[in-house]
Image 1 (tube, helix red, strand yellow):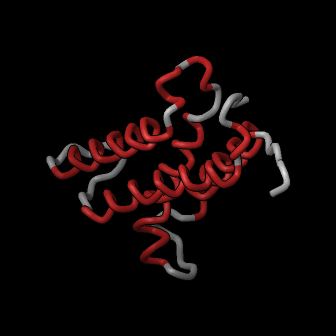
Image 2: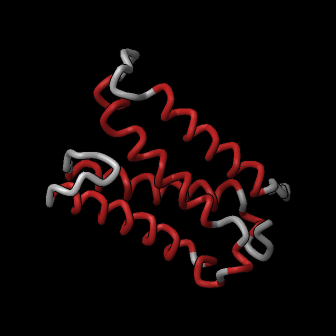
Length: 128
């Protein structure tokens, strides 16, 4: 297999900017294809994906975050905490509890770890 050295930081920044832009187009007024999925779950999938990758930038400052499972778990726990607060009636980042959101958070985090492993395989020693 040919070696490749894809720079982590620009790719992650581009993904994070794309997820941010996605918020502008997928609000409650979205009328495009797959409306129910896009307005209900797409951000719940894309945001954990981008956050796991973002936590992987600059890992020299936090050795614990070098462990992919720690980053994925941390992002999932924060999302789950938000969802539990919504269930308890605390409107944090939304008002509606949906147990499928938990599945989307987990799927987004795991997909980010798989993406990271596939795209940045030679990046394990230096994460710049």
